Image (cartoon, rainbow, N blue to C red; front, side, top):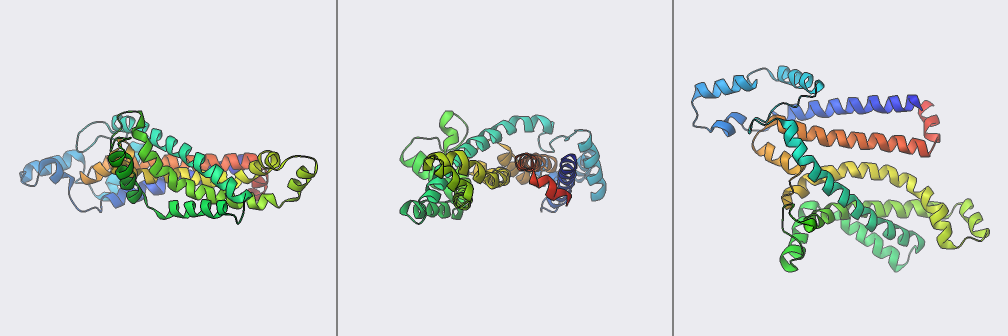
Length: 309
């Protein structure tokens, strides 16, 4: 087990370094100059060069990359090129909104996916099965940038139940959470169905039924816990994808989280803020996947033996 944990941690750190470096170089390939955004194109050449040197943008790209990594190792995210504020303060303002949205969307996805997957597996080849899988196909096929405006049109403009955008009020999270949660629910429902169908044909489930357990008891006591192991892995991957999808959803609903911060920073050519926002999302994604691997290994000891072989 210690060897398995160490291997996963090293893999996570290497992946994190790769993401940070890739984002750093890609963000500098975006057309435009942050100096133009900050001073305007009509600024004097001397003022432009003075600001460029003050921000360290005159250095070669590899030196900027190394300076960024060394500062990051000290826990220093730097300052925003656009506002001059410490990036740590900006992130602390935006992270709670993204976490709030992601948690609610995850709850929505589980509430939708679990009964749909159970119903489709226990009523295979029935109208319930086809209806559940039809919903799953529908949810997977619709992108967030289309689902979001559709929900705004129905829930906010036609019915008037929810605000169009922003985070004001308890019900402001409903539409963005549904936008994120339905796509995730579609994938989870299909996985729950396929996992349950494999378990329902196992001998130990027939033995449980032969000992007097009802069909519902056998499913919830024996079938569902075993079927949820592969779902757990998918859930970890989808939770990371949830944060990536939040970039589009937060932009559509003007939700003041990391995703909207990233889009605003890209428009302003605010390199340090973009890098910090991507780093937060990447760290969360890698951490969630690391914890998923560890929990899976704890629940299924065979993983440890397979990792040594």
